[in-house]
Amino acid sequence: MSASPDDSPSGLTSFRRYTWWSLIGATEFALIVFVGEWILDPDVPVVARTAGAFGLLVTVAASGLLLSRRMSRTAGSDSDAGFRSPPIGWLVAGCFGAAVLGVAALAVHNYGLWSLAPATMITVVAMYLPRRTRRILITGAVVAAAVVGGVVALASGDGLAFAAVFPAVMVGSIAWVMLGLLWSWDVAERLDRARRMSAELAVKDERLRFAADLHDIQGHHLQVIALKSELAERLVGADPARATAELQDVRRLAADALRDTRAVVQGYRRASINDEIANAAKVLAAADIDARFTVEPGSDPRTSELAESSRHLLAMVIREATTNVLRHSQARHAELAYRIEHGVVRLRIRNDCAEESDDAAAGTGLRGLAERLQSAGGDLTWEHAGDLFELTATLPVTARAPSGEVR
Image (tube, rainbow, N blue to C red; front, side):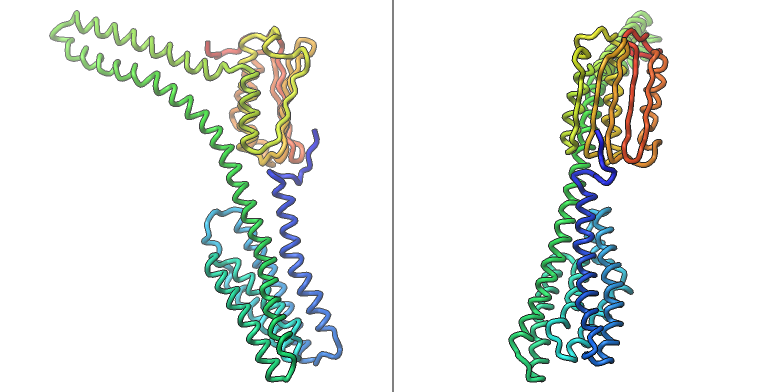
């Protein structure tokens, strides 16, 4: 299976690229093309063209930086605090440049162009404001554009309708398009964070289940052991025989606690390969990851001659690999292939959008499993190529039980 290195969960990287070019690219392009054409018009007075060129340069630079900063803030923050902390210097410079450009165009009665730069900067400012304040600002800007255009037209004897209506429509349209694109990006970011949280919760739920089982088993035993030990301590001098009996009970309870703890751990760790594949499918699906699982004919772990210790090790590899996909990648696709060939079991797990650091993906879990597979006569390797991370485990069908195995 091949995957593009530019893909990310739910196509977020492609969506970001689309939003970037649609929002920043289209905004800058419109300013440069429409205002640039006006600046290059020889019929426009030199003073207006010079002022317009200065205003255009400042507005393009400031709006581009502020839009980029706003999108970057969204990508890494759940808080609205970023709305209220734009780079003040660039914000002031952008508003000043837009005002200069608007006044220069309005001075020569260009009612179709003068509101373009001010509308752009007003919308950029609105992106850093809370929703309620944002609506007030846009509404006020629409009304102000109509009033300013109408007043200048009345004073100059030009057509009132176009001079008042077109600037207001310009401000409203630019705000609608730019804020709409940013809103869709904000929604995509929140959905992606929810997807990641769902994946993390799936892993944590399994750990909590094990912790709860272990607590239930050990809690009762340890409480009784503590009480009987305290009783034996008080009876040592007064009734040695009774104290000895209590200490024998303590020893028996400790043995029972150890046996029950081993049973819980064994039940947790001895999950079958098929159970782990099913669990991985459920967890990855909850994380919105397209996972494909392939078990070649004749390789079904339930019917193969694979030793119990080997089933346990391979199940642990699947569990650890699934956890790493969720924690150390932004995977969109994953693939698991299992087959038995020439007396060797081969398990391969691959995912895209992996982190660049091999250490981050491997961690201590895979290294520990690699040592255990090697002691059983097998091997565990992983490879990071581009954004693809591939894990391969091999183990003889008749592998010996590794040392340190829980029984």
